[in-house]
Length: 112
Length: 114
Image (tube, rainbow over all chains, first blue to last red; front, top):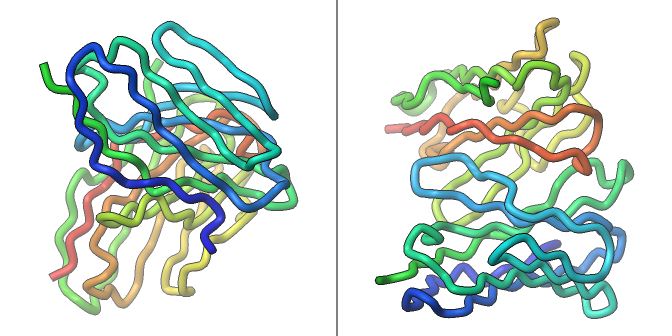
C-alpha cells in the first residue's frame, strides 16, 4: 500500500463548479498536510498548508483534514479556467520520516 | 526575490551516459531537495541536502547521487543512464531542516534518455 493515495483523474468541470479533490493516507504519523498546484511545464507551488485536523480557508480554496479517517480534501469554489492544473497533496510526518510524501496528483480542467 | 533556478532546462542523453543537473536555492535557504516526476507516477523523493550533508535518501539506486556546495547550490548526478530515467527532475529549497518548512520548487530539468 502506498503511503499516500490520490485519484489521478482527469477531472473536467464547467466554470463556476465546486471542485472536490481528495487524498487518503496510511501513516498516522503525518501531522502537516499540504496542497500544491502544478501548471503544465512548471514546478509545483504551495497552495494550502494545514496542521493536524480541521479546516482552513483561503479565498476560493478550503482545505480539510480528518485525521481519524486519514483523509484530506481540497475544495475549490467558483472554479475558473485558470484553476486548470494538476493538484498534488503532500504530507510530512516529522524528522523520523524525514521527507514529504506526495500523492500522484489529480489533473483538473475547468472549461469555460 | 529570485526563486529556485535549475539548469539546464532540457537534457538529452543516450543510454549509459552520465547526466548532471544543477540547482540554485532561494537566497537564505539551506535545504535542497531533489524529486523525480515521471509520467503518471507523481513526485518521487530522491535526495535531501542540508548544510552540505545528505540528510535523507529515497528508494533509488546508488547511481543517483548528488552533493551540496558551500553556497547551498546542489548538483544531481545520474550515472549509467537507463531509458526509464527519462523524467522531469525537480529541485526544491526550504529555509530550515525538515519538510514542515515550505518547499519552493524550481521549474525542473526535463531529462530524455534515448
